[in-house]
Image 1: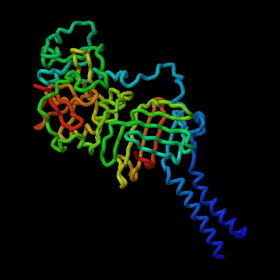
Image 2 (image 1 turned 135 degrees about the vertical axis):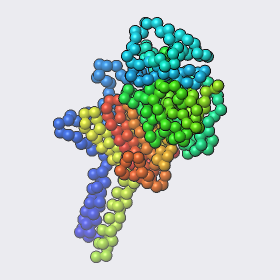
Image 3 (image 1 turned 90 degrees about the vertical axis):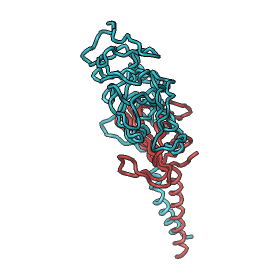
Image 4 (image 1 turned 180 degrees about the vertical axis):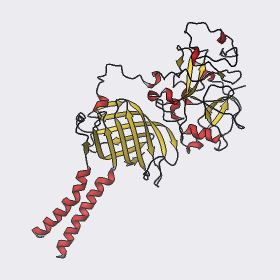
Length: 278
Length: 148
């Protein structure tokens, strides 16, 4: 072997390896005006800002279970669940903001099991008092009707009635930091705003608000509505299909020949709607 | 003369093998954009999928990002939502508080198109987009090196 051939082979090897060395390892870029990120501690991934103690005097965000959802705007029509009649009843306009301490005789009429109250006048509307709180996002499903969904199942016409068949056999589990566990879309609880609200259901008995948001396309929730031929609409008016999804989420839809007005719970395993017991 | 060419050819083959070994083992690219706008790019990130958890190992093997997902919606491309993200680095473990994110997995052997995306997701491809509550954006694109 001559020196020349060794040199040639070495040169070829070096040339071939150069791209590999150039590709390996982190590269940092950034505009000159911006300060560089803190140096990575012992290399690895530089997420130092996210692991360092907060310098913000404000307290750290609450864990998902304790996060306070945005209060629905009072301009949004709201509805009160009425278990006995499966019918949300329209509630009052924003102009009628009243002091919280003011008596509300219109809501003192019991309407069946669960002692939920409806206005005496069906058409009457009133904003929910500001003391009402949002339902915890990770506290079961069905809202005020929890445990009451035992009616005859409305079969999904497009999905075989077998567990998780709709998800290619893969079990679907809610992701707790998202509204509805992510069933209706990737709505992180930390980023929900009034802009996304599509009405709300209000439980006047327990002073609880169940906000509803726009269903995102290409999600399990959108597929469910599509399977039943349902179109989402703003919660509030009476005689709607009220669908309670995972983690106390709720959306409303216009009834059709397949799904009559009333309260329904989603069975995530079979992708079906289960109505509230008569 | 033949000996010289053989040697040179052998060099090329060895170099090609080394290059292939480096790039085929882990092709993930992770981009971290800090809240101040500065960006770090990590190439050759090793990506492992274990159940619904993704493990991303930095190219220097000194850091591992664990992403636990849920709400996986299985279409041709599986879309999951990240629930928790944990950084294992320098002998310590830190939870990275997420604001939101999405994980796309192409578990098929064919390239699949993503909604609103110009480029398809390659076979066994992974696309991860995260935003932390501190305003850091983390994006990962690559293929699964291991599936358990």
